[in-house]
Length: 99
Image 1 (cartoon, one colour):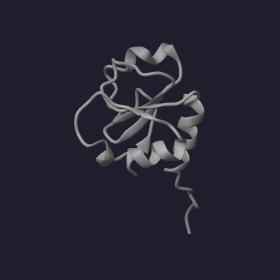
Image 2 (image 1 turned 180 degrees about the horizontal axis):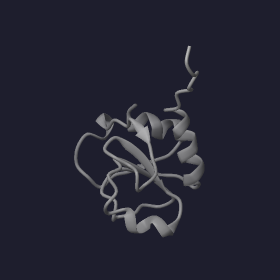
Image 3 (image 1 turned 120 degrees about the horizontal axis):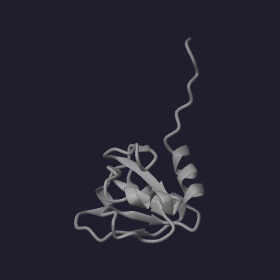
């Protein structure tokens, strides 16, 4: 799913200092800041995790305010926890068990 579609779904602006085509950024999963990999959308909900902004492999970040330490696109939302949970539903695949 494209990041711009997720931002539209969440009703959030995207802050991006980088170069490149923002419209072509693909997100494939939602993960915590320390577990994130390329294609991940992560979030910063607590200042305690700010130290991980420079080293996370997340492609994009949901945050309350712009953080220069994270070089990727940032979705600015007043409640990053809620936005992260809402975004996770976009990637949810129910496990129906063995058939």
